[in-house]
Amino acid sequence: MTGSTTALPAMRKPSGTWWKRNQRRLAPYLFLAPGVFMFALYVIWPIFDSIRLSFFDWDGLGQKTWIGLDNYYELGDDENFYTSLKNNVIWLVLYMLAVPIGLFIAIFLNQTVTGIRVYKSLFFFPFVISQVVVGLIFSWFYAPNFGLLYKLIEWMTGTGIAFLAEPDYVTYALVAAGLWPQIAYCMILYLTGLNNVSPDQIEAARLDGAKGWKMLWHVILPQLRPATFIAVVVTVIGALRSFDIVSIMTDGGPFGSSRVLSFYMYEQALSEYGYRMGYGASIAVVLFLIMMVFISGFIWKMVRDERGV
Amino acid sequence: MFPTPIERTAPSIQWMYRLALPAALVIWLLPLIGVAMTSVKPASDLAQGNYFGWPSHFAFENYVDIFRNSPIAQYMRNSFLVTIPTMIGAVALSCLTGFALAVYKFRSNLLVFFMFVAGNFVPFQILMVPVRDFSVQTGLYNTFTGLALFHIAFQTGFCTLFMRNFIKGLPFELIESARVEGVSEFKIFWYIVVPLMRPAIAALSVLIFTFIWNEYFWATVLMVGAEKQPITAGLFSLNGQWIAQWQLVSAGSILAALPPVLMFFLMQKHFIAGLTLGATKG
Image (cartoon, rainbow over all chains, first blue to last red; front, side):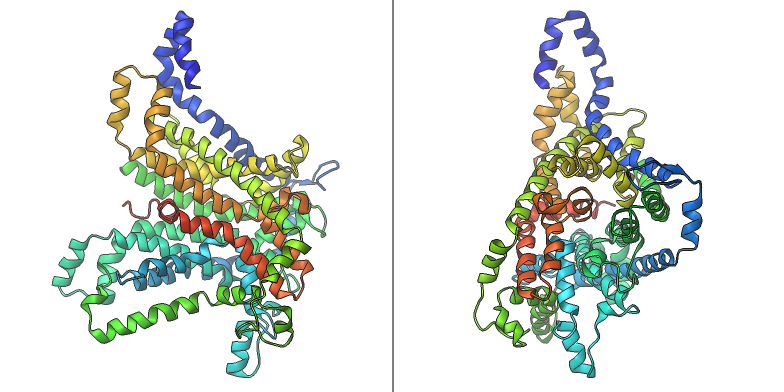
């Protein structure tokens, strides 16, 4: 790439000078072209295509039949859709616990005793491993009769609880598994944030008698705002994207009680329940719209920051 | 520093802290420790109800077993075949896009930038049907190229955000003075900016490696069978075959976790720098 641009001006004078005059204006578009092309092809266009497909009845192979809003009407009467939606809300609300718990662990670990670096890395460990592995680890943890948690509860109360087999508990058990890596992520964000909190302000606040909670609330947290913003963004997105854990640990069961929208969509479009691409697309559109509420909020804030700089 | 440095507190509190650290760590990693222990237990231990005790002997044969009796080596190989091209492709593309968005002022700059950022947040399911259909139509379905191409495209969103912010932090005078000297834009990119981007390239490479190695959804949507599926999707099917053979499931899980864990420990500084980008700017 660089070779050709240096050779060109010498060989072909007129176009070379034109290039020389205009290269700074054209360069950004040339640099952007491959990335934008790929992103448009695989991310932007599919969004619109999914929205279009949600108005069709389609099995993925044969003819597409236009059915207007029928997929959405069907969603309105679909019990499983409401179960998934309810579970998404549970995920979203409880997943947010990752932010304060992550902050708590970060404060706990923000010391300089010997070996603390190793502790920090090991606390971060769950985030590094795949959610599939996290799911398997927690399946073992919850497993009836021999799972560690099952045994622990049995030992304390006399009867163990098979969390993954109880429709009333299963989603909470899945969220707990999902929280494990997410807390680690929030923790590392806050550890970095705490590292950069201005020591002068802390000392000044100490002289004014601020301590503990007061110090945390009035002096530390305002300075951690960028870390909190990122922690909230990744946690909200993570909660709504939850798929791996559900698929690995329960496959949506028992009796579909642990489905979330992302999983239900996959099930409708691509599994033994039949290839209902149009219906699946309509579920995806609903999930997309829910996420867009949050995404536009985040983007709005980021644009404001960008303009402010 | 917040909280108060432990050295400045009473000795009793210092002692408590020193005890609390390992205790908290063990509780935090309890599920993982349990699975690691299970992975080296002989099947007979589990049959006799020795779930949590010390293994009667260290049964590393579990690890040999999974290699011998399952396509796990194939799955691992497939993971590498998807992960490494994705890593190279996404980092390369985002060097270009990040440079364009950080250095040039043009009208749609912010619009393109936020298109990348926003696209990075969308649910995978809204992309699933069209991407799968496109892959089937073009013959990319169930190929490493097809899966890697999708990942490259999608990861370019996050990588662009990262690269653009990184390049914005570089001294702009370097570029200006090169322009005054008449250096072409492409040479500025290649000879001035890229060498300065090394830490960002390292950070993104480890992150993308980890993300893609651990990725599961697209591995099941775009790939079928042990011939092509990466380890995450492979573990799902092996888990179905190894019902109740927890020593094998555990060994497989530990093995699947190993490459990103190694990557993390070897490249920790870059890994954390990449992940916490923006957590300190205010």
